[in-house]
Image (tube, rainbow, N blue to C red; front, side):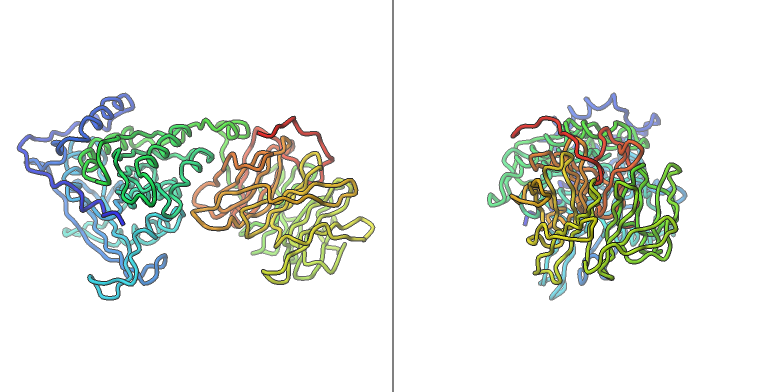
Length: 607
């Protein structure tokens, strides 16, 4: 593995030139060009005056701690250090700089100088070492966790930082008894690191932009170790996040050719961030896998990252044509208020009112014009899926009872079919139903059933395992089914008699954080024929040729997207749930409810 950044930091030498305080505050946007010019000019040079101690500059103190009882990484030991600047006042929570692999040797001096000059706010730096499972303390380990923790591109390390590290830091006190109080605002938090620590610092903000908004990544490992090579594609497809990023690397950087070129990977990440409208800058030098040049430019990079503070970092506008086609500018997700405790089985009636099952309260709720859920039925059975028919009747699957039920006007459930352990259900425009039934074991294929109004039934397919989402294309010529443990969505041709043929695993979905499966939830389509899949990565939007073209995120913190449906009067509002919260968002496009009559699609081509 590449060496931690702290081993590369250049030790600053003393200089007598004073640093003076600037009362005007932090740099504004107008100062960007000179800062970037200085950074690129400094890259191959010696440390600047900002990295050297000066007489009269107040110096803070270093605190230390160990986390030996981690929940996120059982059995590990994480050493950490905390630099508290002299200006820190517990009456005002401090800004935070989290440094992966530990605090660089010159970092406290840089912070002392920049805080005094007013170029950065008062901030506490937290240096965290990766975890170790020791066999012999300090000598031999069962496991070194550095690559596992920092290179993994999911939210695990972010949860460790937010739920374990920073709360532990806030239990410390300075020598004079001041308690450590840290800001919880994303605008007040930054992350940095080198190599594996570099990609780890980026992932902190990427996974939790509600908690970190500024990133300095030095010789970042965006290569094929644990999924980091996927970042350029995800950045281009995903809705932009409110984070600001500075990248540094050298043109001969390739720590191990087995994984490819670090420099090429960083170029790709920078290109993707620019395409997607991020506030991103870079400094490319002529060096290998060396964090020294990145340490030299740290002072001006911090000036660039923190310019305009305390204003928050704003998300940019992406050049992604699918995002522009489906999203209303300025319209984000909003959380639907209410007293519900859990959410599953979304469905919309013919008026666009959205119904869901609250398992924690055994209640069926509906969201109408008021925007606040109202109870439709209490003491409801354990519903797995819901769907409205064209006559406005709500149908639901109850696998524990092996039934499909209908909800009447008095809030009572009446059995319409039995002997089916159904999961998802889709009511068709003809008044029939499609029910997905899982196998009795993970190895046993399930069935797609066609239930007719007259009570007869037939098997449409018996090859899929646990279909988690089902939908028709708007013209009813295709039928889609997603399996829970697959990255594929199967496309069937619908024959004249309603049977299915010519199955292909047509749609490919992105995994979340390098995981091998997508754990796909249910599916919906819009009137242009685009397919929307609920996945742990977000709402993945596919074109008619089976390719993911856009990824929509729920507000953080939230869990994996589990359910989707179209609602609102014009069915132009997308509803989503992570199992706990209910969210909605106005869209440029209109959805196609399952019970709708067939409608022609716009012309398309092979693409």
